[in-house]
Image (tube, rainbow, N blue to C red; front, side, top):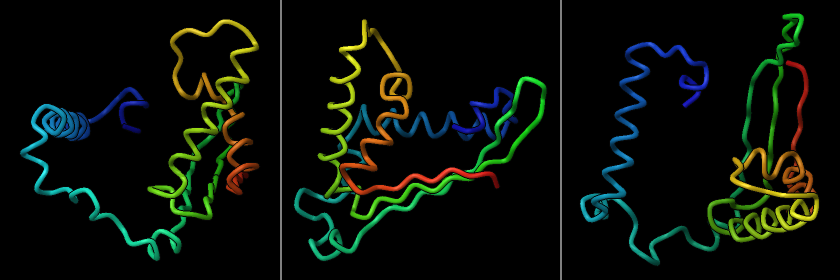
Length: 138
């Protein structure tokens, strides 16, 4: 996906992205074929595993100013609990709360999550779920 954002993928990158899209499409269109590879209901992680879980994301990027000056950046986003199960519903509620607050600001429309939620979702998750986002120069 990062390859597609840059706009000039190599042939191998393009083929890999298309293969991934085909696999996801096949899983949606023929779920029975893929069901044997997925856990059945109730076969998820144990409560102990979920209580011990956490998520720490690392990102790298660069900021390019209008004059062409580039600044390398790095980020870390830490969630103290299991985001796959325990925090999913909480994150959905917080996203909904941000959307409700922003709806008061004016008309909406069809928006991407980044445009609809903006940095407000990061602040809200930091406050309500004890997540921590850090951004600095690399």
